[in-house]
Image: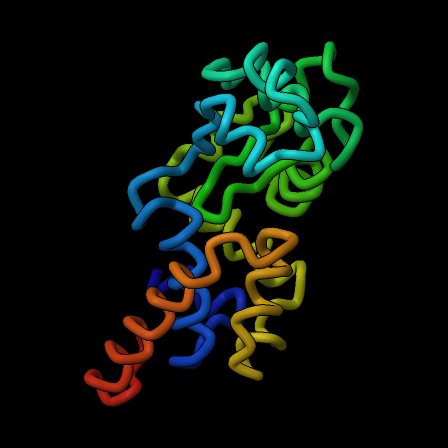
Amino acid sequence: MNTVLPDFEINTPLRKSHFLAQLAHESGGLKYVEENLNYSAQGLRSVFGKYFKTMEIAEEYARKPEKIANRVYANRMGNGDEQSGDGWRYRGRGLIQLTGKSNYQRFSEDYSIDCVNNPDLLLDPKIALISACWFWKKNKINTYADADDIHLVTKRINGGNNGILHRQHYLESFKRVYDLLGKTSA
């Protein structure tokens, strides 16, 4: 991180705190670099209700991660329809869970890493980190981190306020770390 973060201007204690808080939430405490889509029917209705309007539909997809991804990511983010398999192929990977064919293509073009044809390259720890930094910079998230606005940072990462309390907990923890370290670089 010491060599990668500065290349993306994630270079102040506040920016690092926000970045690391988001990574920690998105990756389950820096344990996972691949989206877990193994939802129960009830979980599908709760998290992806607009795609699973009835319990009957949700039950048809429950505990079938590939089928779930193909439905919830169909016809958006550059993905084809549900039958194309793009939802599963371009599911969230990396430390910020890069999702959708369009993001995979843009990242691949910017870094000459062919994640479009080899999506699992984003599971490599270094590429997982670089893709997270790339997404952060591409979406100008430092602006919101500098304003210490966790709601806008989270919205840029995830489209809403999913897990905001968990993200806030991580943010407070990282802010304490940087205060204890005299605001030195990570």
